[in-house]
Length: 236
View (cartoon, rainbow, N blue to C red):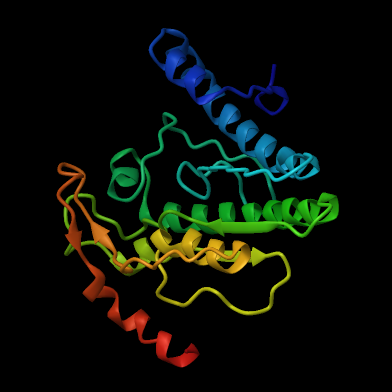
């Protein structure tokens, strides 16, 4: 059975369970983890629009680990199989796992190009199937990590890491609800206030960083991003 013909979609629980067994070593040798990851992404994007046909209000959440490493598609949608163990290593951990910064940048760009095309088709399908205008929030939890050092804030490009995609559709209203420096903590507050008439207060837009060894000892890096926040004055 070739890799391209192998189809396997596992739940997160199943993946964790298998990782504790000898099967994980066998699947790693055969490259099945890369195939499973590709299938999971394709399945999510190909079937997400089906939820729009559900009767009554519905909240749908989809978390896709892409274009996060490992980069498993190129810009043309061709399979990419790095010659190393499957791991979600990012930033300096990507280098430690055998990758290079040049590989990261090229792999990220190609992977992102593929993902953008899939997302556009997915969103078009949601619009086509929805009986009422949907509310869509599309945002990332962090930016690229080609210049991220998990052991040092000073050696990391925090602007790259905190720059995320943030796009919102609120059922056809044409009044902008986002601003350049908005952080994820306020995205749902902004959307709910505009689309559903709530009155949630906004929290302070801050960005924090922590090194890998001490994840709960965060450092406020908002002042390091002040240059990007000057854009606010141009749109307010």
